[in-house]
Amino acid sequence: MLTLSEVESLARAAHEGQTDKAGRPYTEHLRAVAEGVRARGGDDELIAAAWLHDSVEDDALSATWLREAALTDRTKAVVLAVTKRAGETPQAYAERILATPGALLVKEADLAHNADPARLAVLDAPTRERLTGKYARMRALLGLCAPGDESD
Image (tube, rainbow, N blue to C red; front, side):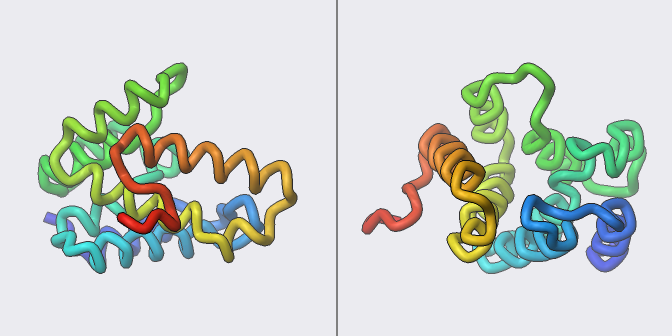
């Protein structure tokens, strides 16, 4: 099995040169999601999934690579659960996440970083508003409290 350090190195290499919508290195997002999973009590399998959560969706690594990788079945299942599929409705995506043990924790950390007000503040207003709505809708579909809710 790959160690967590090896998974991190693979993810960093796979996303090398990619940037987020604000022009920041994409690996900063991966690190933030992995740390978010750790802070929420996730174990090494889920932290590994956090490092890899966008790898197949972004074509940084192939589905074949993931299938053949020296990772636990649980890590692979979580990565596949949080990988959006072409033409898939948000409801179907949320249902798959909710049906896969551990996937909600990874997606919650992903959404938390994506919706970070400081991260969104550097985007133009239309993009910021579109993404804020998108993330709030997904949180609702997943049964997560909206950011700023008192019950959060």
